[in-house]
Image 1 (cartoon, rainbow, N blue to C red):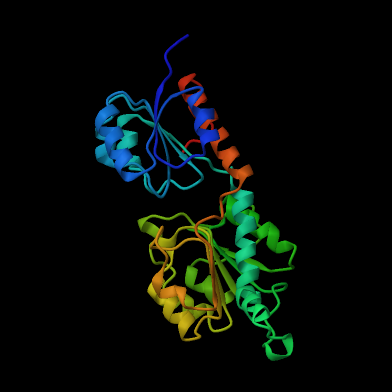
Image 2 (cartoon, rainbow, N blue to C red):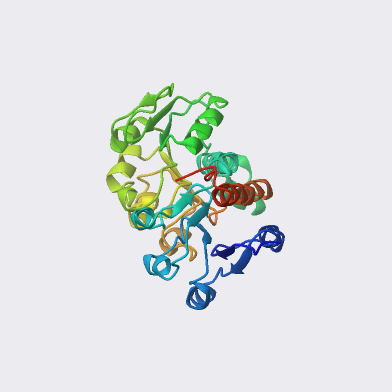
Length: 312
């Protein structure tokens, strides 16, 4: 039997998934900052592969400490925390889990959307307090509203498919029109926001999209408009959003991501026109298993010489 290939795991995995990976690879599991630093310092010279996620990435100095590194994989679609140019210059293969949790994220996005538009959080609290419907303003329909999607990638397209079931016209903004997309294209995010009743952010994170959803975009959505974000917290200017929600310049928002992760966004917490979840959109037993299986397929393809399944 040949020696197992040394693998550094930087993201959290269940015991069962750790065992699945460890059956094939010589794993060092380092999901905390302290364990990560110790693993790189003690074992960096022997690692040939790294498993991580986009939001925690891999630092250039960590890459420098791994002379034998030849593969870096991200679970999930995001990879904004990887130093791609450095990895490319070293000839290190990169892959992600694109497509493994798209359905889960799209489902969650629609849950946030319905909860935000219908005011489910506040209705739940009012019902528990004994308030009957006659004393409550009517929340608006979801069906028929114009849905703007910022980032019509694989997740954005699945959100659009779900919107069809609600008879929602769909518009979108990308850097360029998506070939074959049947939806209306807007050449700027501001123009999309002006058209939309609900704006869903499904774009990649990173410097290029930091705070692009700013006060101007939120004001374009307007006092009857709603924002949903399942992309990255950095895409939305938190303080601008807090001001718009607090002052009634935006009707409501549903967030699964926020800039202060993993700490709660303090400026938003007291607002009852916000529905928020702790970056769970891509997490389900089905999605996580698919993501682990994709990593295994990417790594097996690379080390067998066929190449990764889903290259970045």
